[in-house]
Image (cartoon, rainbow, N blue to C red):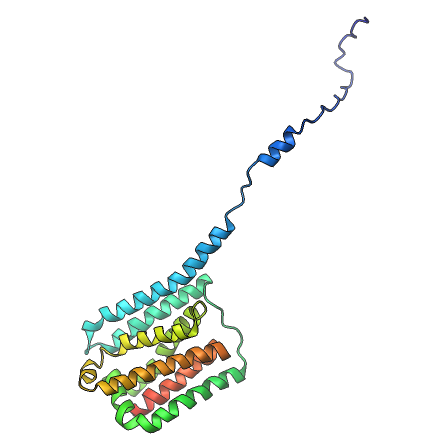
Length: 249
């Protein structure tokens, strides 16, 4: 055997032959668990929150309306403002957080349909029920309000809060007829305590008003599905002016 050559530190290093792979590295990489997030679970939780949060807001607003009943009859305007403000607040927060459908640019014909539907529903009630039902009901639902204050409630406060919450937030997640029923229940909880004495004395008038509220809310939900959110907003403003404001003059 020949002796080994002496070690030379200046000599270039020889590349070592590649060791035969036994597949251990590949096996280790294949066996490493993936650290991907649970996308399906996160999506399910997000959907659950998006459905439950508006219902929670509806419960809070209804409870606030019932809790403010002792303010009647001296502070009707304050009760209405706080109750509708709760609906509007939940809607604005949902819009800011991105869980509510954005309002797109509307076409003039959609706004025209909103006006037309409001006229088709409101004018027959104005003609046939103005003297016996609508006039007395408007005076009892909005007692001691000036013409300007009542106009502000019917054109700005009420349509803004209810359209954004029911037609904008809830109707994006629930069926339209369910939203119509919930909006009617909200109106009954809000309005009927104000005119409770008249309701107990004239049950037929209370039934007519409940049917009227149901028809209007179902119409708003239909217009929202057919022509968009802005059209439903305009439709409610027109109905409010015909059904509540004109009979009160």
